[in-house]
Image (cartoon, rainbow, N blue to C red; front, side, top):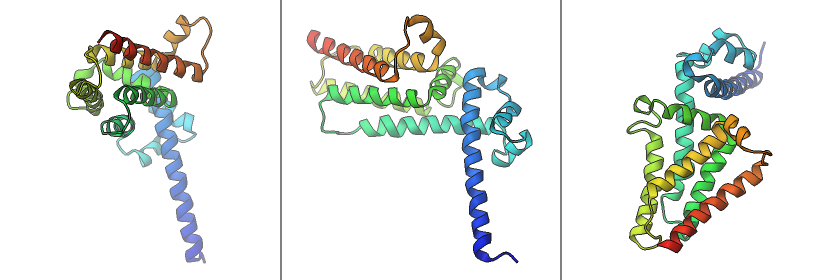
Amino acid sequence: MVSKGSAAEVGLARTTTDAATRQRLLREAAHQFARFGYDAASLRKIAERVGIRAATVYSHFPEGKAQLYDEILATVSSTLTERIARRYGQNTGLRAEDVIVQMCAAFWDFCQEHPDYATLLLRETFDADNSALVGEGGPAREVVAACIGYVEAAQAQSELPAFDVEAFSLWVASYMLSYHGAPGLRSNLQRRPWSPERAREQFVAMVKNLLQGATASG
């Protein structure tokens, strides 16, 4: 006879294993979607890389590939919203210029930690009108609106000089997403690979230079 205690332990172990398998499926699916796109990504290949049968995927994600993709996009959007929009879209007590630098650095760190997500964001922009993430009303738009809104409010309060916020935002997003989400482009343009630390330092320095240039000409 199995005691209640041991039955509970078995149940906990199964739950832990299921949760771990689910996370591995999401990570591998993100990699496959980033590399091949949604249509070309294979559920069988995702399962194979995780070490389970394709049919077992449906016990974790009943709607299969579509549910995997939706949950990955939901993770991307919630992380960006919490890490950037809500964190910096409020009074932090810092100078506006410092807040913008930290905001950009937080976005950089997100892309560096999750390069597959950066690639997915790039892919989503190719069909933005039909994207739940970057399309009209999508969470990526919320992040962009929060960032641009912060800068424009700081400009209105004379904490920052007048400069083209949309052009600045386009440069920041383009640089980050292409650096992390398109590694082939990066490797073709760099004569020597940068360390992650150097790449981050270079990016932050360029952001500061752009802001200081705007301040000097403002």
